[in-house]
Image (tube, rainbow, N blue to C red; front, side):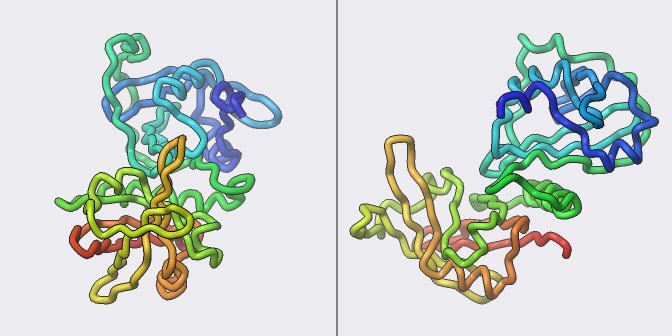
Length: 261
């Protein structure tokens, strides 16, 4: 709903722990150093980001499917990381036109850090497990810090990816790194490419289906995906990094960051 961009609730558990430390104004800092002032207000029995939140969200293109990780630094100051729908951290381009939102750096040296909110709405009405949300956020930060000379693609395990439907979606960027040859067609008019998923020295054969539609393409790994999920005990909220290590006879090395039970 659009109103969520104008008023965003802070988790009650966080307020109970740190509420006495909060003023009526919060300060949000993104990795490029820009700081945003957002007013805090009490509403419907909770504490919410209000005035200034809409500008913060719209300026960074925050939409349904994006994920925001907040690290509390003390004195109503938060560091914020923003990940887009494919679970990739956004480019925090510095826009001179928006410098009005930057303020002087005079906050405390308090180094305490706590991830307080995961603004990720997957299938259904969203997660009802704050601990798992925190695990996903931490895993996503770790996954985005993973470095390789090979192309990397990050996928968060959603219910439909692990419930036996034998399919999961991959980020659109993967198309740019696939070979031009080796695809076949089937009755669905999908382009199909044999792919192998690798963990350590074991391989799982799957097929990558690419469907071209008017609104863009979809990339679905199937025909063997459910066996990979089952044999690696993947669960909702786990974060997988797919590393393209071979383009001829495509092989994706998979690094799994699991949520704790």
